[in-house]
Amino acid sequence: MAGKAAKLACPSCKADDPKRISDMTQPQSAAGVKAGLAPQYIPPRQPWAYLQGFLLAVPLYAGIMLSLTSPGDSEAGTAKADLLGSIAFLSVLVGYGVWKNKAYAKKLEEWKKAVASKLHCLQCGHVFDS
Ligand SMILES: [Zn+2]
Image 1: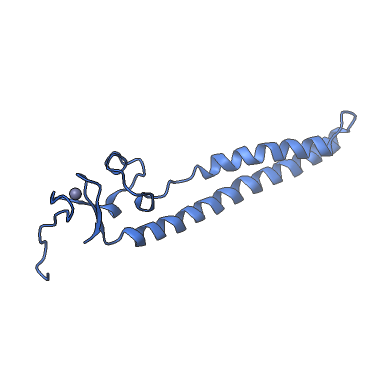
Image 2: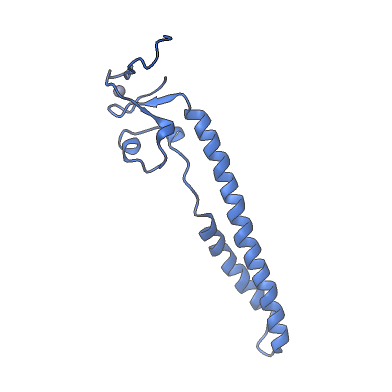
């Protein structure tokens, strides 16, 4: 087994040229999906962290503006609420984005470890250790 670059073949269907799972960079990799790759071998999706953070932050900002201002407020009062709202908005947007991306990086690391030695047969979808 020490011979280098021994031709690998799928132990299930004998097709050669199995694909290294760690070479897949996109979860939407057509080959992986078509061959019915098990969920644990599908790379994690890059989150749309900042967009999600934005969507979370908008109602927060609106809530702050609504609760801190009233129609009769002075301009200074409104400006203060706006400042607070903006700070909250940015904190959530950036905080959430950073947190999500960190979680994604961790998942990606775990995925890389899990598939480091795995090969995937494109013919039958069999996953095996190299
Ligand atoms: Zn196969």
